[in-house]
Amino acid sequence: MINKETITNKQNGLGIGRVLKATICSIKGFKAAWQHESAFRQEILLTVLLVPISFLLATSSTHWVALIVSLLFLLFAEIINSALEALADKVCVDQDELIGRTKDLGSSGVFLAICILFVVWGEAIYGFLIS
Image 1 (tube, rainbow, N blue to C red):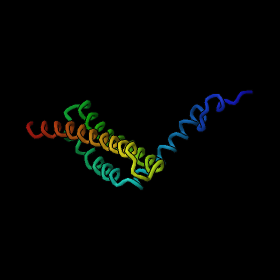
Image 2: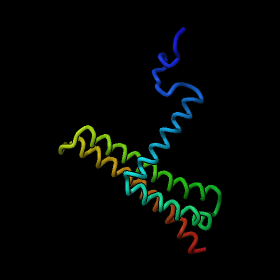
Image 3: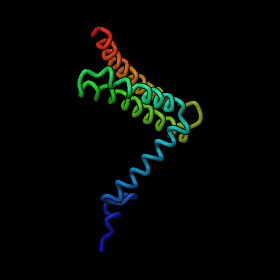
Image 4: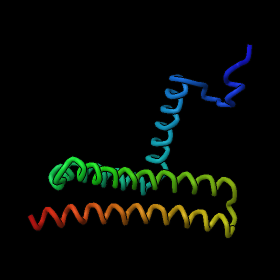
């Protein structure tokens, strides 16, 4: 009999078991981000502060979703940037042009996420103030 794990080459298995194992890995990732990344902690605090305000600012359910998604996208970008930086530091601790570029690109991704957040939230605040 052929082992399904051999065919798929997946350590976490298949089906619901894989989903549960992937969830555990995700939780470990959130814990690592919280423990090792001050920017992530700051962005979580920002999210906790802004989510209640989003209910006041949103003019529709779609508008509310945009506000929340902009916050989640910032957290996503920060986690990806942190993962890139951790990997880059593991691969090479010396000054290296490509490693530096990798870190700069990750930082640019976070910056764009912040810009998106400012546009979405700025529009909501402006709409709230003029209404």
